[in-house]
Amino acid sequence: MSDIRTIDCEEALRRLFEYLDAELHGEAQREMEQHLEHCRSCFSRVEFERRLKAYTAELRREPVAPGFEQRIRGLIDTFKR
Amino acid sequence: MPVHVIAAARSEADRAWFERSIVELLSDLFGTALRLTRNRADAEDLVADAVAQAWTHLDDLADRAHVRGWLFRILTNAFLSARRTRARRGVHESLDCEGEDEFSLFEQLHAPILLWWGTPEQEFLNRLLREDLTRAVDELPEAFRLVVVLADMQGYSYQDIAATLQVPIGTVRSRLARARALLQKALWVHAQEAGLVGRKQLKATTEHE
Image (cartoon, rainbow over all chains, first blue to last red):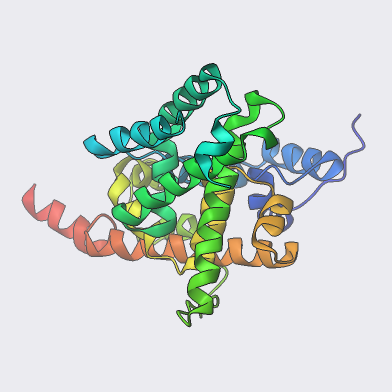
């Protein structure tokens, strides 16, 4: 279908984070994707925010202190009794 | 009911599966707990608390394939409930913070005053250190840190965040926007202080050449 409404950069930037957070659906998402196919500037911005979001996501993983896994295994061990 | 009484009804296979799942996810659980509490000892206690609660409520987990999301939900709720207790004891942390909603690191990096070669935003990200980002996230006021943890680290939908934090979805949107602006501004300020961006750094480079 080619009757997707054209959105401008201002509108695309307004929807930017909702797009990256997978909160855009249906028509709104298609309009955004179509804009990004044609606008290099907004595409670069989206890629930047996407990478920054991905880096932030990596902060959820943190090496644990050596004794901590033992502490948790010890705790789970008490569930036996 | 004490944990060990409930546990009596469960098999050794259940316990072994539970232990495997927890150990597999331990660095994720700990990392999330650390972002929430900002303190290693508190983060360890939070994870231990969540593990004990998870075992107590194991029967609530209908499909074991969903153990990950279920554990993180328990962890987040354990943190929020401890936070509410603190609030009742009079330890208040501000939910609001003055600041702008629309700071864009990307736009700063593209300011014509900076003489970058190639693509400035990619250069910036290539030089960005995990510790810089960690510090920027940890320095966010709690209400903003929470939405970043839930949206960016746990991948919650806005609706799920609203339900978890018991706030309207509009509040989730505005807090996320504010959180991102604060985060990007902190990264920008740090990058300038570290000489990663700005005319000063370019001048220094030129002088050494």
